Length: 184
Image 1: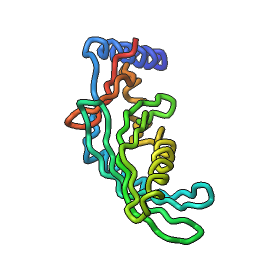
Image 2: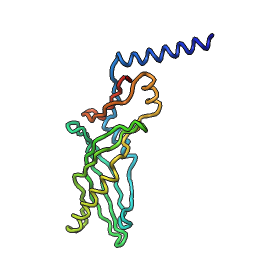
Image 3: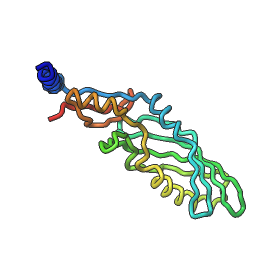
Image 4: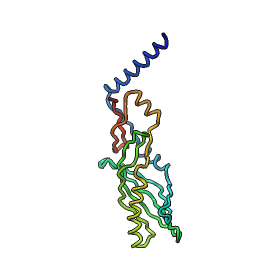
């Protein structure tokens, strides 16, 4: 008898909470620019080898919110060295990206990455142009889909238990805003 009462109370509470979500409307999770900067900075530096000729290190990301475009701008330091001459070249990458929410693993990821500039200051003129084209392609490929934020499993479970599910993702002046909508 006591077990039935507990089940009835638990079921009623769940129904009531999900009903409240519909009445109360959407909720927001806000990730400030400072928090986002700290989370992204933890993932760097990153070093990769390309074409078995170049070792490329990308470091020191600096983020800027672009709410008018619903995008994120990022400037990164780049260091590259060719394996033949072992001559280091230093420069930077400037890029912008959209953001998307991936419900499969509850992550916010970079999407539609566009490299605005890729400069290796120590490279000679003709080589600079070739490296710039290759660098843009590699950076877009390397960064597209990269995780910038992960929702905690307990937060997702808590939201679902209260009748909410992740919805729209926007870049605003106050940070990244993920809207939680009442479940249908």
